Amino acid sequence: MAKFQELYDFIDHATHSRKYPTNTGHGLKAALKLFEPELKDDERNSLQKFKENFDSIYQEVFRKNKNFSAGSLATYKYRVIKLLGDYERYGVDPTKMANWNPKVVSRGVRGSVATNKTVTQDVEPIRGLVPVPSADAQRMEYPLSAGSIVITLPKEVTAADMKKIKTLLDLVEVKD
Image (spheres, rainbow, N blue to C red):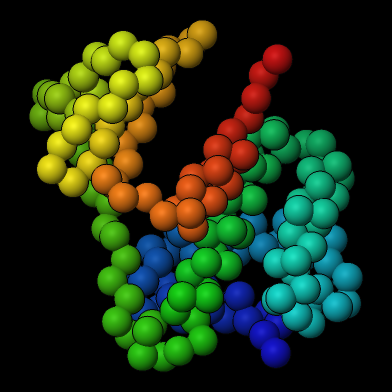
């Protein structure tokens, strides 16, 4: 039975094998450290129990950490969710870990012409929630009160994919 401590070990192993950048590993550990004081013994001794009670645990973290903004706490929540997913996919099987090729994100220099040009090309103005078909994706833009949101989805989206998207959207801080 997997224990909460194994998440720390997984982060160390993933960082050491360059699956996570060092800063990502530090961020994931910080998220775990925020959740850990709220765990009961059964949650600490069983990742399954931790996952089952995750929403309740997060509510306690949120209630007890008034010094953090709601957005920061949502970021920590997202990090733990991502870590749990990575652990389930790669952490228990050394072969899967060895074959794990994480997406490498490279960022350009802020304000450079190339960066701005790319952003402009990626975000074309579209009115309403209108899909823009392409060979392998559908893209939608929807106007909001303070700007707009652009969503790019694969042509085929599974129920599991939609659940992940909903989880991500639940992390967004809402202002009334």
